[in-house]
Figure (cartoon, rainbow, N blue to C red):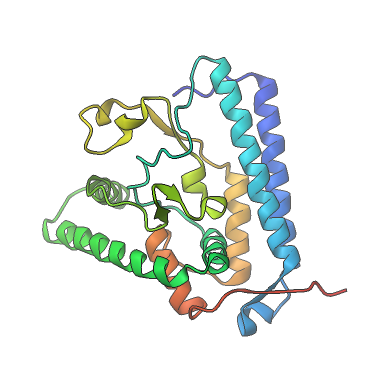
Length: 253
């Protein structure tokens, strides 16, 4: 889809949204107390406040973008209860996004269940990767990864965080889920639908500034996780948190 047709004013507004998101992420990074995360897996409540504001403003920027897209004649068909894209395996996640997802699962008391479901998806993903290696698939790393993700999608396995067709951690979902849209009939997004290849789907990719702000947060927290949703969640639950919840502490005065 052609996004360059947005007006100069719209582009300026989107840049302003990006600046606000980056600023909140920077404030979250500055709130980290040296040593408390490494030793106690504890973070200041201010960290969570700034992180949630960053996601909130990012969502506002997406709504702004979709409004201008609609004025240009494109109407997004995604709606609550539509989960046809939720058989994909989200990739490109940062560690902080996984931390936020884990925090949501902890608060809902579903970490163990989400862990088991994620492990099941990891096994499926492992089979795809083994098949890929054994079949000596050609192409660049990016091409091979895209092929693996496409094959996973065709399995039509629901996301481990889906419950009764709805995302159980919608508020805490990663950017990969927030930025994905379609302007085609919803059922076309099912990988087994005969019109799947003709569906018009797109991602509203985060700016370089926003992604760099997320990456700096990862560096501050020392998070080096898989960027695949289920793999990163399992790694974080086991290797980082040991299934314990993140401790949210009062901010020092």
